[in-house]
Amino acid sequence: MKELAAVLSDVSFRYGNSDDGALHGADLKITKGECVLLCGASGCGKTTVTRLLNGLIPHYYEGNLQGEVTVFGKNIRDTAIEDLAGTVGSVFQNPRSQFFCVDTTAEIAFGCENMGLPEAEIRKRLSDTVADMHIEKLQSRSIFSLSGGEKQKIACAGVSAMLPELIVLDEPTSNLDLDAIGELREVIAAWKAQGKTIVIAEHRLDWLNGLCDRVLFLEDGRIRNEFTGDQFFMLSDMQLHEMGLRALSARRNYLESETGLLRLSDCACADTITLENFVYSYGKEAALNIERLELPKGAVIAVVGHNGAGKSTLTKCLCGLQKRFRGSVIIGGKRMKPRDMRRCSYMVMQDVNHQLFAETVLEEVMLGADEGAEERALTLLKKLDVLAYKDRHPMSLSGGQKQRVAIASALLAGKKLLVFDEPTSGLDFRSMECTAKLLRSLEQDITVLIVTHDMELIDCCCTHILHIEKDASAAIPKHL
Image 1 (cartoon, one colour):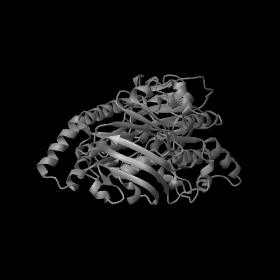
Image 2 (cartoon, rainbow, N blue to C red; image 1 turned 90 degrees about the vertical axis):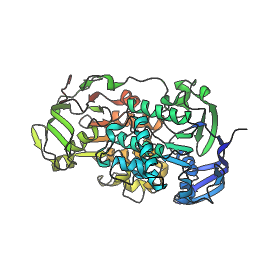
Image 3 (cartoon, helix red, strand yellow; image 1 turned 180 degrees about the horizontal axis):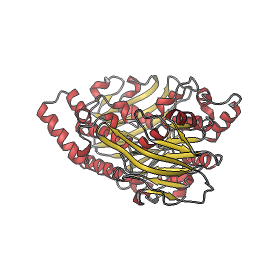
Image 4 (tube, one colour; image 1 turned 30 degrees about the vertical axis):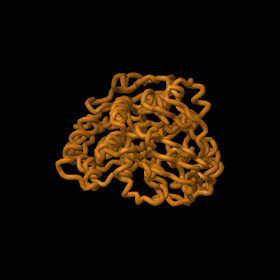
C-alpha cells in the first residue's frame, strides 16, 4: 500500500471574517508522489485546501475548523507551522507575499538558511536550482525590478531549493507567459520524477495535461467530482465551460507575432494617444525604449510580451505613476503632464491587494465614483458575480473575487483611460467571460489597455494587440 502524504477527514472550515463556509465536509487522501490538480470557479475552496496542507490554516488564518488534517503523519492542529516548513513548500498566487529578501539570490537561498543547512549545501542547492529552472539571468537582481512572472519564478526556485516532500502551488502561472509556463512544467515534471508530492490549484489547465495523476473539481466548498488525469483532459471545451472551467484547446500565441501594433478587428478609432520618448531604466538596467507609438483612442488593446519585456513599466509611465519618467503623452494635440495622466487614467494593478481600502465591497467600488452612482455600482457587481459579497470586507474575498471588485471600481471611476495589469490572472471561465463582455461594452471614447498573458481573454474582447519586447528599440504601429 502506498504511503499517504496528506489526509483530510470530514474537514469543514469557515474564515473568521465570513459568515459562509469555505469548505464543507471534505474527505481527501493524497498518496506520496502523486500530482493532484484542484480546479473550480473562483471562491470554490481550492486555496483553502492548499492553506490546510501547508498549515496556514489554522495557524495564520483564523476561523472555525472541524475535522482532521494530517500531512506525512503530522496533525496540522498540533504541529507548529515552522515545523512543517521542511516538509511542505508553498508557492502563493502573489509571490511578493512570501519574499523576505530584496536580492534574488539571497531570496532563493533564504529558506535553506532558515533551515540551518551548512553553507556548502546551501551553495550547491542554489546552483542546482538556478540551473534546473534556467534562471541564470535573474541572479543577483533586485526583487523590486522584476516583472510579476519573474517574481513567480524566484518564488518557485526558493521552494525548490528546500527540497520539501510536499509542494503546494496556488495559481502558479497567473503571471507567466507561455514560454515561462513551459519552463515551469519542466520543473514540476522534475519534481515529480524525484518522487515529490505536488498539489496545484489552478485556472489555466492545458499546460498540466500529462502531469496530473488526479483532478479534483470543487464547487461551493465541496469536492464535487474526481477524475484521473487522462479522463479529465479528454473532456471537451463545452463540458469544461459548463463546469465554469477554462478551455483546453490551444489559442493563438500572440507572442509569435511581430513587435508593434496589430489590429484584430474593425474599430471606429479616429483619434490617437501618442507616446513619445518612452524611455525608462531601473538603475543601469533599461526597462523601456519606445521612440514613438500611436495608440488608437477608444480601442481595447492587449499589451503582450515575454516576462520582463516592460509591459507593466509602460503602463505605469502612461498613467503618470513612475517617478523620474520624462516621456510625453499627447492626447487631442495637448501634451499631457504626469499629473494630467493621473487625473484621466485608472489602473488596476497586478496585485490588487495594494488598492483595496474600504470596509465593504460596495464602499470599495464607490470610492472615487460620482454621487448617486450606487445603483450603477450594484449593477456592475451583479454583472461581475460579486453582488452577494457587497457587505463583506474586500480582503476576506478570494483572489479572483478581489480582482473583480477592483475591475468594478475601475469601470465606475469615470476615467477615459483604463489600464488593467493581468486582470484575469485569478479568474475562472465565467468570470473572465463577464469581464470581457463588460470591456467590450464600454463607451467608444474610453481607451482600455490590458497587460495580459491570457490569450482567451484577448480573443474575447480585444480590438488591437501591442506586442513589445525588451530587445525592440521601438514599437511602430502597423495599422490604425
